[in-house]
Image (cartoon, rainbow, N blue to C red; front, top):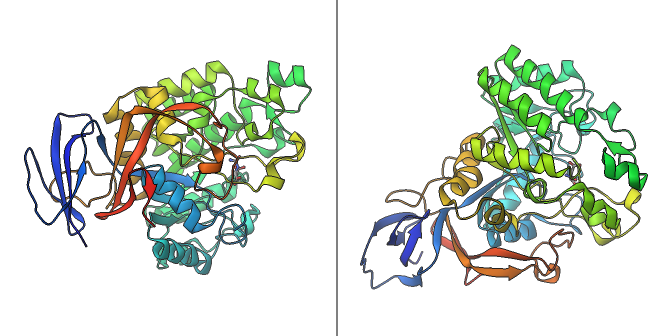
Length: 425
Ligand SMILES: NC(=O)N[C@@H](CC(=O)O)C(=O)O
């Protein structure tokens, strides 16, 4: 394993320093370091962040390898500055057994581009009828700690209660896709003025808020950990604010697209903007941004949802919901938050690593920490070209947009996965 000397780099926005990476860890920091055997990376003008951690990634393998594989999604993640991703369970077959989560975990290890931590399904086949083998997944080589039926809501309150009770034994988490299904039957986009004008069936904010309200009460009753996926409304923020003030063990994520885009995008009828939960209003976007800053929303998670061309480039009503996210998330965060590096490190690396229990990740580069880090050039503005993305899919809502920031290098346990902005393998 060859050592790397990153010179004159700003660690999370602090004054420039040198970083020596050796044997998988940050061996030394300080000005004027020398290491004749090391490969030098000029860090002038760059910011070093702890490697980003995504709590919500769809890698599509097994089952839809035409849309993404563990390998292609891992490469997209590394290029986006990530060193760890949590892979959602809505694969085919569903990741509801020890066998499937171990398969995904093993594929992640073989790719070696990011740490892939599988999420297990809460219910068998995501059908919402009976609990999956949560204990066997927890005890498997994949050591699953987060369970989610994402794509579907665990709508039955008794099952949700049982799931929360079950995972409490090993301090696990239920990550809920908050959507009361009876309120979103046939829904195509956010229910509001735009859906009325376009004549598309609406997905009301209350369908999300009602489930979050119910689930924080259940989590409080059981004393267990709840995580709320892709929070999208101002009302959800207020429910979470109250729950956190009462001490409920709840964490929440927001996606880059819900921080930037609004439901007016549906006016184009371009299904690239169809996503679940749907893009909301400008007032929701403002509330989500404020909650991300004040901590009511704990993290940014991508909900990277690759889809094959035939599933996306069709009539709006038939298109699958979901957008790519891994290769653009940091740029969107920079656009939305500005160069608030400490906040970005907190919301995109330290806190998601803590929630997921990924103890090797989420550390600011300092002597003795695992060398999982990413180097960002904040001075570059890049144009997003779908054809250049590493993902197997092309459904980015940011096509041809100019966004701030470029990932220059990513290191996983001291080995570069990205150098000069290009994947190393
Ligand atoms: N977020 C999305 O729009 N899509 C997700 C699942 C889902 O939440 O519907 C997917 O797996 O494609």
